[in-house]
Length: 370
Image (cartoon, rainbow, N blue to C red):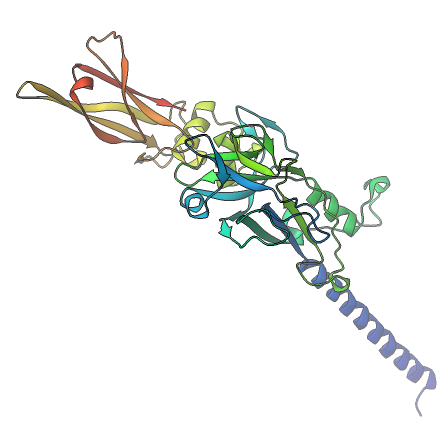
């Protein structure tokens, strides 16, 4: 005969098992929804007038200054041939004009496009960046152990609070990059002026995606460039160190211990600093040869410049293209002690033919200008 207490226990155990399975499933579903949460950032130069769906837009346009001094809305084709718009996260925004931002990470890029101006628009030139990231892009929340007495429970943050704090720590910058050189420029309300479109990002993130409408609703945040004049131009240049840091995903800790010369050279040559030999001056730069000819009384000079990086594996790499506005300045003199005069600017290792006005010298030297 069956023991009724054992039967009741079996039923109770099965019910508890079912409840536990449902609880596990609920937790798995919650974990999945949090992990799948998408953060959308819409940014750029967006000449749409302010509206409830675009509270950050005010019709601001990107402008050019023509040779005759007049201004006009930027041309899409000309812009895309030379530039690309970039969204940059720069941590707490610490900045100085020599080194740029202390930290930098690319968050998106966008070319310009043409859209027909309508009732609520002020121009045809649009930069509409759309960057999407997993909620865990800056790290994953870990619930503290309730038995951990060393944890600072007075500053406890819930799931939502933690993600909002982490995302809102990052300042966002909309900038314009020159494709050929990598040089990066702020947007400004005046040509070459002080920067705008630096946003101390405030996110109001919800991790319960199930209660949110689909994108572009939900966790969508807009950071459109806007100014009182409704115009922006290319502004001051952002020090190239910022570009180099973002390109190589460096942190301040990654660069600790490297000499200033190694860092400056790695930036100019667009190399990872860890690839360079551990030398104070990890490159060779010299005029390796030159020839003078006299063609019916016309003196010509052909000068060859050698520019090699010394790499940590013992090899050398010829540097043919410098970045960030750096260049090689070739100088000439009639006597070893000078006076020296600049006769050419080179973007890297090269052979240059000098015309007669610059070739009447017997001595040449070259140096790197950052």
